[in-house]
Image (tube, rainbow, N blue to C red):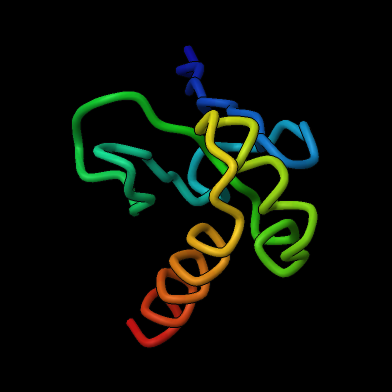
Length: 87
């Protein structure tokens, strides 16, 4: 008898497309700071395609985090993406 494997599906906050959890990048917004998910607290997902479309993802981040700090999100997102590509 074959086993059924469940693949978790999550939604990108920017484009609202659904994809498998392992193909999305997981972020969290804690203490007025955007960061990669560290294991506890609420989080959200952004797909790889949207990470390349800065304008669209910044708008989604401002909506998700209920903040109007556009430049803060833009600079922090660039830091996270460049750090992620190095590793």
